[in-house]
Image (cartoon, rainbow, N blue to C red; front, top):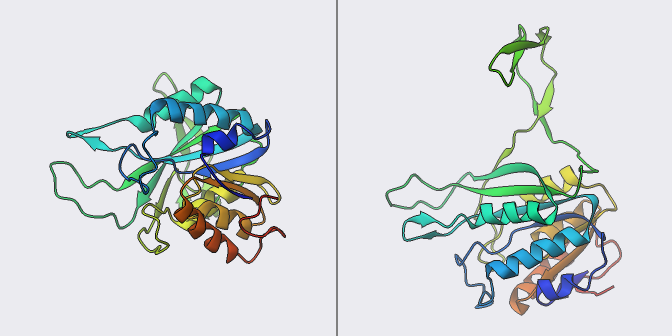
Length: 260
């Protein structure tokens, strides 16, 4: 289901607890104009949207909020952290703070180190119902591992032996950027959306993106057997998303752009 309209207005008409997983990337302060549609992007607006996301998220559901900060007069705004803290005030748990590292960031010349990452806040409504961890190969052998206690002491955690052949991926995910040519000014990698969808939902679940943009989350949700709801207020981006999603191998029997 793809809907054209202001996401706050649309979400307010959605049922309580209808969403299993949200994977979205809201506007980053005023870094993009998005065809002049951000005149009302204020703290009051994003606070209301986060509160509505809590309402429509199922118990055990998850919201992945991919966000960065503008730099104004040499200082980062910190809006991303304010949004994360507000989510906890609305009832979400800050389940994980992850990093989206850009493998090939645009180079800048200034008096700071090269910016190359954005935050991926993972908010959960209670304990996450679904977690399908992405595994990566482990290497080598260990003679025993330790864990650090609160008082500073180290105690044996593992008696030693071969490391399990696989381990959980770390919370820093690295992707190449800039390959998309959809016409949208801020597209995150398809594999980023895919990896969160596979991690926090199961086939048949409903995935949501209130800031649809070029349709990346929707495309990956449908490709991997999830249902999808997306909202976009800009008609140009909405048409871009419809075309991208229409190219998906599976549309769960629902034509792109339908309100069914």
